Structure formats: structure tokens, C-alpha cells
Image (cartoon, rainbow, N blue to C red; front, top):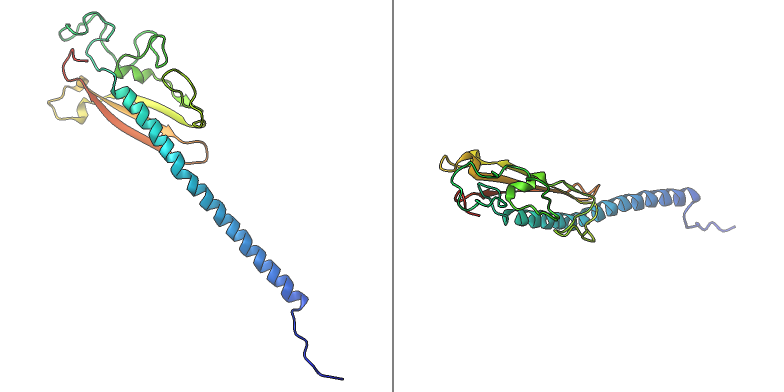
Length: 185
């Protein structure tokens, strides 16, 4: 009989190798999943910033007057009383989408949040932006400025956009609109 040594792996060694390899592959799959989720976040964040910027620009481009822009004396009325003084919130049936449109910055305080989809100014849903939530808050901001600015002559605009569920993205922009003269649009 010859006494040669056999070489190779026993069954126990093969099973242990397969178990260790399986644990390693499972760990890599979890890591890959986390990296994939994190790589989507910048796209969602950029879209949320674009939505917030668009709404902020739309609002800040509206006039901020002492009297409602529909008032016939909007350009000539001295300090109140006006026929229709401008208040925070919409006057009458004004909406963002018409037929009577928001005509003043403060009207956007009545803007209902866009939930589930983002609409343009014509109330058309923008494809690819489903799942987002956008809201607007308008408040007097006279106390945010030096005493040279009257309390009712400044508005703080806050636009908040939340990304789709499970993205954990929230963008909040704040801006101001000052009334430069009582009758200036």
C-alpha cells in the first residue's frame, strides 16, 4: 500500500466557505441598496429646489399694494381707507388658476397646498413631478427689518416643498416683498 496524501477540501470546509460567501454577498447587497437610494436624492432635491424657486419667483413678481389692485383708486388712494384695502389672503373668488387670478403677493396666503402633483399656472399637472407637496405661507414681516420699515410694509414669503414619500427631502425658501410706496405696484 502506498502512503500518499490526498489533497482537497472536506465537505465541512466547503459548507463553511459557502456560508461565509453568502453572508458577504448579502452584506454587499444591503450596501448597494443604500448607495442606490442615496444616489436618487440629489435629483429629487434639485427638482424640489426648482419647484420652490418657481413658486417664489411667481409670488415675488406680483404687486404689493396698499389697496387691492382691483380697487379703482389703487394708484391714487392715500393711506387707508381704500375702497378695498389689501389684506393677507385672497379677496373674493381669486385663485392661482383663475378665472379671477391672484393679483397681489398677499393673496397667496390663500393658496391651497399642491399635494401629490405639481401644477403650472394653468392648472396643468407637470409630468415627472408626482409625489411632491408644495405649500406657501405669507406673513407680515415688519418686525424683521429696522424701524424705518413700517410693520405692514413687508411680507415674509415661505415656500416649502417636500419630495416624494421615503425620500426625506424638504426644501424651504424664504423671501421678502416690500411695499416701496403706498400706491406703487
